[in-house]
Image (cartoon, rainbow, N blue to C red; front, top):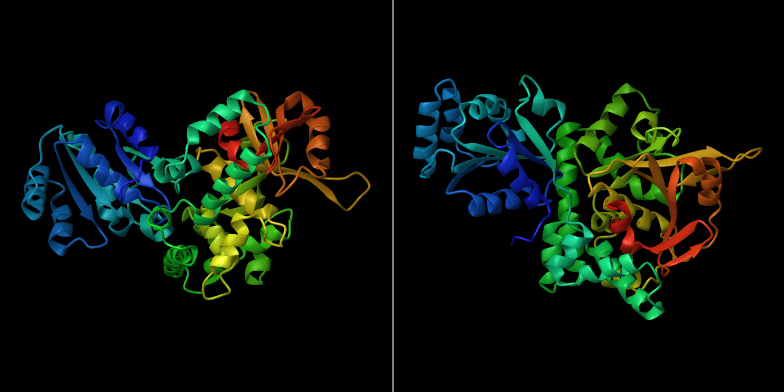
Length: 444
């Protein structure tokens, strides 16, 4: 099943402006829909296409790449093996799961230079050492990140009226408790299901939440298998599994030692980089001085990790039981889970920011004369200034950190927001917004 995805528009732009000089690489975690998008695009936008899936390509297909020095022979063999006729300037060749056959990725330089056809690659774990070892990474390659389905894509797939949220955002006033509660419940359905296309399809097809949870567990199991291929010790998997627990403790940063019980060293830090490269997690870096460019003040030793998908996050929270029961999901949807779920909403917001192709930043600083500290959960640049966000799972409650942040950095701040489940509101400089409006605040 193909669901409408925003990345399609980026592919159209690539085809129109860049495809004669660059291949395009759809990069992202496993099961986010890269292959489906690639083939749907090829079918719609080209006269013919050849799809080579390197997870199941025959030896005959792979041996075609031995003829890359003679492209006439290469294309003849490819057409003979696949039974597809290629048309100059009207055909697309897809290298699916290209990380499994690095020789094909290296060939991109020659293929693009030849100019007869267009090339689209899909890949996960694309930057992992073993997948780039001994090959020259082509400079003739544009990367497009494919994220799990964002809330707008989820609404399009499930028939929810996302345009209504746009109108609420533009009006900028409260809409009343009953409507706000209904819209928050709709958002919590997305939090529970997530944006992995298989899970979304299960929800659309009427599967119960336990069945959807099993789909998500299979995806997590697939990730764990990938992690073991990178490092057989299981430490990357332990780093991944530690994320919900570390976020729930409201720690200032992710601690490797908490996850794997060893002091951080170069080798263990490389495992974190491999985990980040897998695109299954989202790093959020501490900006040491938000007065300056966020990227210029990124502290590589002080970061948090979030999961790339909110639905997988919910499943990982309850992974200790054989399956997350329907009643757990029912409590989540009705906002009746007993735990303080601020960290779950943090992960939701992190995913919303990342799906807009923005890096994640936060800021923390010590309180004067105290061992405690202030923390602002997310920072987003807007022009030469920044917007700051504090996340609260329920009401507006205390919001000391965000107000102190504004006092300290007012010259550099455009707006400060407190994101919660409550309706639109305002308190002096602080703007209250419900979580379902977050995307509009990112893409102003």
